[in-house]
Image (tube, rainbow, N blue to C red; front, top):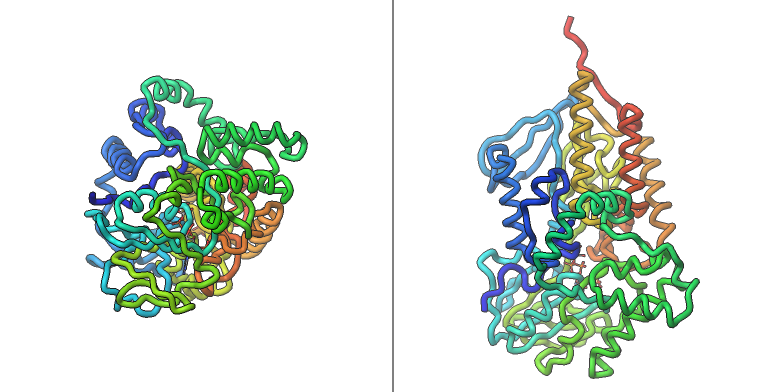
Length: 496
Ligand code: NA7
């Protein structure tokens, strides 16, 4: 069977809120078919939105931006594209995504591999057939965990090369009934209000209790119910799961117990037990039959923390010990150069000739994750130090788009043609980010891509804003209300 798109890939927010909220009619007319849809359904939705709001006439498709440089007076940008001539604009808004720069391990010998290799972030549009093949998967993050059960069913044999054992909670995916669709459509006003007031842009309330203020039996009941319900809501079982190590350990151990229960071979189960970080301190995956897959005879789990992948050889992957895993196909589910990667690959240049890459040599600096000092008239949707990947992404994207649109309207109304983040405001925002992250357990997960740890040589900086979505959106609104506090606005002087 041709696996298209990426095997098993689903969004991990539920469909009824992994969508736009700006139009009440749009909410009512679109009906999702599954709790967690596949890429083709999400694409069909986006096509529908593009047509419904007549957006295509403003989009140039199949256009690769190769660079952007600010005008010397900081009042405009020249954007270079691979196809055609340069473009000029007054304001440049990047929407390059947080997880779009594929992280392919820099392994010697990749070009000598006799089989096929793929990165999940660059899966061929026409799909891939792995029927009857020896397949290796490198990586057990959200993507690997979703792909592994599907690849195992199709391949002759699947070898999973795991560096860091991960937690996962069942997604409990399934079709949405007519009654469920009617119910969420009827409740949209309330759903959106809960999302707006939440820490993560999800429409559920975090249990205000501490995991430590109830006895073990009650806690077990709460976790079991959350496990059965499935999805990211498990994380909302208690308010302190991401703030207190002891509280977190109760959830971590609950998931470890489920792994011990599901996986029949005790050695494999032991290898799958997460031990170096707490539940949800790295991005928490949700899955469909992930741990169960290790009960198959045609699946092998290899620990590449103890014995790392050292090279690609024509026959497959060679580990440091010299062991070679013979493979027909290698699937790198090795994640992304997150948050900063897509912006640094664009590498805009400011009015004084400074590139973003040199300005961020030791890590990102932004004001609100929306703007960068030294780069006037540039806005970065879901940039570093905004809540972005810690939230339901559509919520964060809409909040940024609305804020930027409001800012542009303000500039136009007041005759300003230049806006730049103040370096002092940017520095204070960076410090606030560090404090917000340090108030949680999130920076303690040493191998987290939130910290850039998955990309060799990347500066270790906790990149998403951990202070919560509602609080962040409130701050952005206050900044605008205070006349764009922390920004320098410029008006073109009248020519005498
Ligand atoms: P992730 O979550 O970054 O996972 C990547 C996985 O690949 C993770 O298990 C890594 O281990 C592993 N990895 C990366 N490089 C290597 C090398 N060189 N050798 C062995 N293993 C390696 O990416 P995903 O695509 O799964 O998910 C990204 C996000 O997309 C997801 O969270 C959703 O928000 C959507 P590590 O843990 O670093 O030891």
